[in-house]
Amino acid sequence: MKKYFLTTAKTALVLVYLVILAGALVRMTGSGMGCPDWPKCFGYYIPPTEQKELEFTPNKAYDKGQVIIKDEGLLVAKSDFIASTSFSETNWKAYTKHDYAIFNPAHTWIEYINRLLGALAGIACFVAFIFAFGYWKENKKIVVYSLLVCILMGFQAWLGKTVVDSVLSPVKITTHMLTAFLIVALQLYVIYVVSAKNSIRKYDKKFSIALVVVLLLTVVQVVLGTYVREFIDTIEKSGAPKSFWLLQPEITFYFHRSFSIVVFLANLFLLLRNRNLQLGFEKVNWVVRILIFEIISGVIMVYVDFPFGSQTIHLVLATFLFSFQFYLLLENKKITEK
Image (cartoon, rainbow, N blue to C red; front, side, top):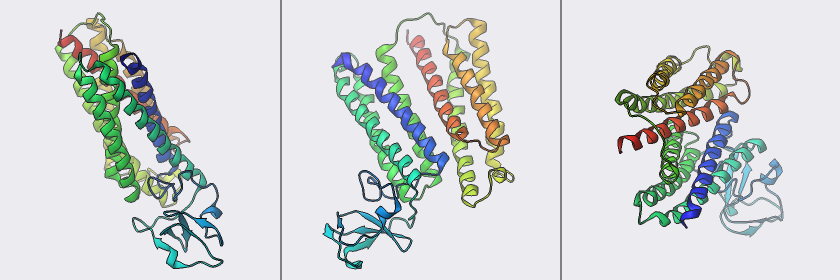
């Protein structure tokens, strides 16, 4: 089992990144309610592609839990039945968790693909957990952390359901994102423990402290970003054109924008400290490069009126930034343990 663990763990990590990418696409396109129920999508395992599939059809066989849209509301089949030539309310019950009942084929399939990738990532994480038992005797942490990843993936699935039921609650969306970061961190940890090779790096106390600080700053900045995004979502739903989205932003936006300077300077300190003392942490260079592109993508969103894909790129870059910073923390931790 041991020889298959690393490949499986890396595959699971890639799938988690793809889920985050898909989630960013969901946010960018406003597809969060593309599937208004959970775990199915309009009561189907494979969602519909046309509105007429969700309208009442005479003489059609309906399965229990199948959903139709009628009078701007969702109705759920109480049991398996074959419809008569006319609609009968006795066969249906109202969907009561929320009153969202809009079908958009593009939104539905974007959200469905997001859920599908989440399921695949969950399966890969579980398989990695099984293979992790090959390390039970030499390092039990690998098994424990792999199990924790599986538990968090299950929590993410449940949280995804509550996000839909709450019609995209900002707090739950933020929790959803931070949980994804925690999953990435744990998966990176087990991959690092298994694959890390000895390399020549030096320990520096100030550099070590700064690593922890920049990681915390990144998490705070991501949380601020989710609240800025929620504000923009609210303005977007009002029908305002993109050029109006940030005409009168909340104070969170200004704090998020100004805080990026603090984040950049903290990471620049890491870069200069590493170069001047020749500490040997090569990934610091990638951290600063990613951060520069992250800031540029933010500037483009503000001053070029949110071009297509810019929001997704911004979130994905934040994920990679966190990943590289956390991996640096692991590399530094190995030095302190020697």
